[in-house]
Image 1 (cartoon, rainbow, N blue to C red):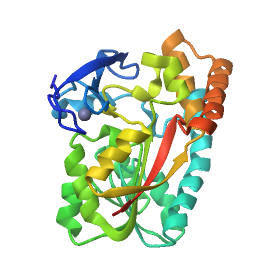
Image 2: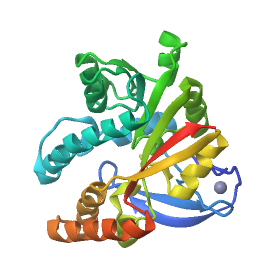
Image 3: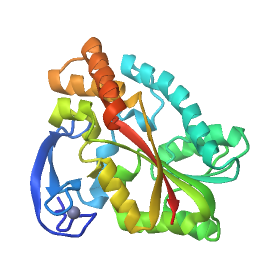
Image 4: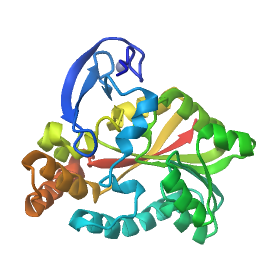
Length: 294
Ligand SMILES: [Zn+2]
């Protein structure tokens, strides 16, 4: 295991325990989440070494990268995903009507495929070879890593860069953000979706909250800390949008982790309560942040 000695956001070295969570999907080991004493940023600490992190993604249940279709949660997830893909597309086109797009952590390329069909020039980065293969088979231009993209098309800039539930997974936060900044056109938009531990479902489920997803989620964001992080790279927040389905999906999983079995009604009610509360607080289970360069 590798101990993070300095806060990934403010670089101070003092932190307190925040929560101990279990990895319910792969290793079934416990991982600690700490809170920076200076800036309150939450991060998983210690973490598996970078070369071992890939092992924690090896699960049939880790459905974001696979096309298995077992169980009600998986089925529901797919129905909702098709709906939300269109919503994501609309959001992108609200800011830039057409152009070049990079989906960082594109998985099997489902989002890029939607973009491609309406005339966007699409690029994807995806470390998982199985997922990347599926994306390539759809005719998408995909790369293993940011270094790989840099080597093959170094001068390429993008009008839109998206990270849909990806930033919480990247090991080198600073290098990744510097890379994204260098690849974005001056008037481009950077769209980042991440879970929000300030949501009601997170507060209700505590260590069972599925979106802590340790150790795959290295950072645990809330509106204040993600803005501060992007501000360091000269990005200014333009807009925050809710992902209203996430509270239901995350509650379904969390309920299963907490009780050892599914409880669809309880999960639905918790998801609903989370969205209703968030109408006033803005703290939805997951949020989409739209940034522009200053
Ligand atoms: Zn800090």
